[in-house]
Amino acid sequence: INDPADPVLSSFYKRLHAARQNPAMQKGSWTHLPAKEASEGNNSHHRLLAWAWTHETDLVLVVLNYSDAAAQGWVSLPSDWHPAKDVVFIDPIKNQAFPKDGEELKQKGIFVDLAPWDFHFWFQEKSSKP
Figure 1 (cartoon, rainbow, N blue to C red):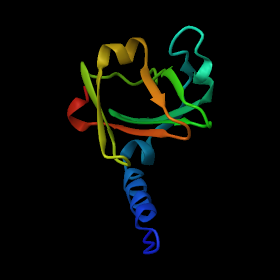
Figure 2 (figure 1 turned 180 degrees about the horizontal axis):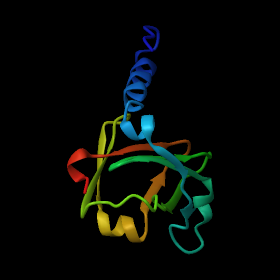
Figure 3 (figure 1 turned 135 degrees about the vertical axis):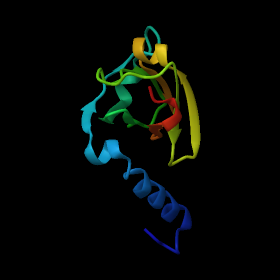
Figure 4 (figure 1 turned 30 degrees about the vertical axis):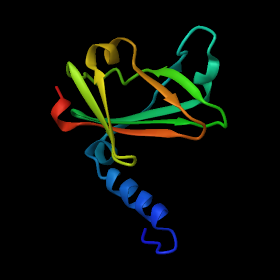
């Protein structure tokens, strides 16, 4: 994990290793998540791969654009996960936060718009659990 020749890559792997310690990834259930069209006629959702781990109230969500073109879509969330009214997803790899409406998450899933080869690695923030 510590590569002095490439500190950026070393930092990435340290954050990834720390993220894997989430209880959902350690003890939870894994599931593949389907992606649906972002809008009529936009078939770029076929470029998205998505999966989740759930454990008790913990959720880890990974969405990957596995292509050399941009991709958009609605990703369905696990049926056994029940979000709070407002949810904040934290991406520990990119150090970003994404506030989301819990009702929309239940009804539609989560909207993603990813550049080529990009990804989201989201945890549900502790304060936004039900």
